[in-house]
Length: 507
Image 1 (cartoon, rainbow, N blue to C red):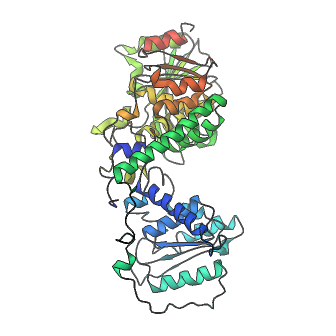
Image 2 (tube, one colour):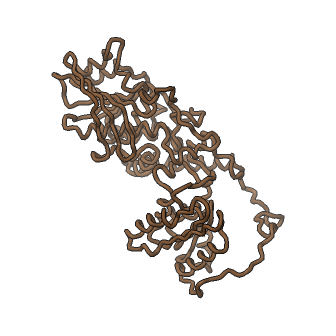
Image 3 (cartoon, one colour):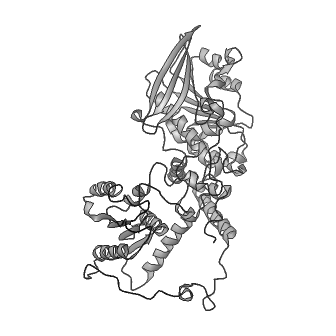
């Protein structure tokens, strides 16, 4: 496998295929092999590596319970998190860093070394936070770090000798400390080579393209069995696909203390009222320009959350508020429309609706930043969260029009019973049709978990109306609903007039 090639295209992102994932899988399999050896004590296994090997050390120890002690050298830091393609994966560090990943090993023995590189501050920035986590287990003494700033990025003698003493104690080896390294003769290139004439490359070894095809085939076979579980009630489906959706999209509707409405103005005219506000998430700095409309004399507690690619401006017609919205207001509904991420006011001053994505390796971007689609879903959930805090709001009906239909459908699937219904135009969209890594609809992992259909199926058993979708395009969703009656579908495109018919026409 070429180390920096083969996993930077759209398909790899949609299937969540990456070199870091492959390396972590290899680490797990290597641990399987080591534990199979009769002269290995499976209760005393240490893991160590430097730089990218340090990344693999804390990644293996984060996902596998078997290691006893870990020493990731010159990699755990609050500064740079990993510069190689093998150290970055989509979603891995959204809002966290390597210190948090290393902390997943608590309360087992953990030590780290730093050098004159991005780890130079480990003793004062990183170690204190790790000790704080370890103290939750009354194990603060089990984690330690030391920096050797006189040396550059390395795993040289002083840091190796630190490792020896750490493993001697952590694995109860019984050696005399301090352990000093003696001279050794490096192996030759020939001695280090794995495959040679006597030990040839196996006949079934795969090139990158074939390996990726096999990985996708196995992943899809697993997903097929998960889909079959829908016939048994769907709990396994929600556990697996629901967990993936909360990582890929958002954790869910925010609690009342996590979101707030900052009212900017209230204007009344001819029996109606328009409210301008910012919906904010103080912890992250998210801020959504939002408008709400209601009839002053006919208002009920029913709210239509109107999601449109043009944002709140889509409520306007040629002479003020568009007629369909006025019909909804006259029927007693309040209508709320936000400018979700990179729509409406976000696009002033020539700003694009596309995120600047690393062209050769998109995980450099998506490791640390939410995809545009994820942020839009998160914004919709933020508005739902704010509406839930208002005493005058009862049922929330989520509506997604035009290109925003999939955004709303995904948000509704995450929101669960926080919304009374979701009505969305899917526009016959499939993630498989995406060809550019900068496409604002790119959602890494979407094809691994059943495309748009597989994710929208999480809305079951809530009331769901899907437009712009054929039977084949929503087969998983249809299976999730079974005979419950909560799902209605149409191949027609959803229009504002149809929204009026659904809500004000008594459907």
